[in-house]
Amino acid sequence: MINAISIDLEDWFCAYNLNIKIEDWDKQELRVVANTRRVLDVLSKHNTRATFFVLGWIAARVPDLVREIDARGHEIATHGYSHTLLTHTTPDEFERDLENALRVTRVCTGQKIVGYRAPSFTITNKTLWAFDVLARHSIEYDSSIFPISGHPDYGIGDAPLAIHARGALTEVPLSVAEIAGKRVPCSGGGYFRVFPYALTKFLMRQVNRAGRPVIFYLHPWEFDPGQPRKNLSRTKAFRHYFNLDQTARRLDQLLTDFTFAPIKDILNWTRTASRADGRG
Image 1 (cartoon, one colour):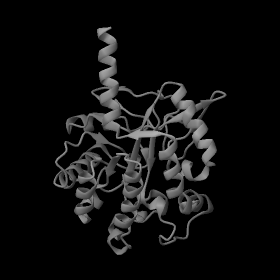
Image 2 (tube, helix red, strand yellow; image 1 turned 90 degrees about the horizontal axis):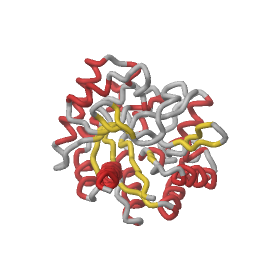
Image 3 (spheres, helix red, strand yellow; image 1 turned 90 degrees about the vertical axis):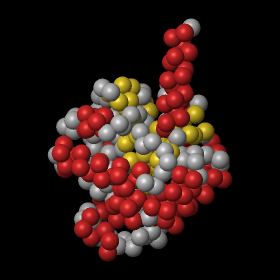
Image 4 (cartoon, one colour; image 1 turned 30 degrees about the vertical axis):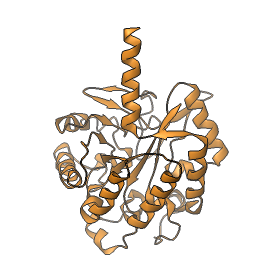
């Protein structure tokens, strides 16, 4: 089965756990270019294309990086502009943020931008209004819903696990495996760094056996053990810094063990298969 791989294109200081205000981002060391090229090189080694959910603030600062990603054949989608959690904003503020992101990102690519991912996956039961806003701006799919319970920032515990319709949009949820009645994340990010690789591989195989492609994600800063360190709580430090020196090696192994493509390709193949089944 072909799975989907995605990169949330943001720098280390954009991460919610670090709590660095956007007004202070220009004062931080910009490391996203070198880190993204590390990711691009690993993907190229395995002849794999990905979806890049581009943060508008990054597109405005380093548009040539977005153009390079585009030129290498990857899908360009949007991650909003300011990395403000939807649970911390209003529909009007969200719409303005989305408009800014699309404006600065579209000039960097010849592609039509049809995909969106919310910062920290914060389309929750409290922010389902976001789908109407996304549809007004010609977004065709969202990949923001994490179908789990118990996380302090995100999750819809009873959300469908498979790709499904959400009004006018298609929802591409982050992947979890069902083990003994429990939903266990296996979609990348901190889970990829914290879990032993063998466990991630096992969980992803379970998702594929259930007939679903894995929707996988990483951030460029997760390839950067040399990034500046902030004084964080023990929990937040663990989430952000654990095993940063292992991410590149693990991604290389993952791309050996599984086949990946951009999200838009997965959706196109799914639609084609559905039409074929209908004709049958």
